Image (tube, rainbow, N blue to C red; front, side):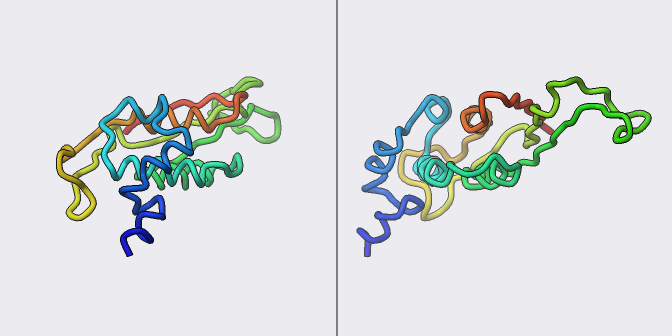
Length: 148
């Protein structure tokens, strides 16, 4: 049963380095923060399912696999007939800009039967979110990050 459980990236332990090696992990995004077993598993699952569409929901779902709850705001150009008084007058590039809204800090606590000996009791930060979202975004897109 242990081999079967370890064969799936979301529950892997002994085979986790194999999953990471085949997916190019850790990378520049994941190396920057405290990297627990659970965060490593989340990175593997995210990388496996990360080749999706360019839709807003795809980015939200991918962030969720890493334990982040986000929303995304999209912008558009100001256009006669579509814009109303008081709206921002956005230029030609604004359809390619999105704002990712997230918590100021993602706080991850150690969990019984998920965390391992030697790991910290808590980690926090959003460097992984910023980096991975930028890594997934098409080159013509500008991502802004808004924290609350």
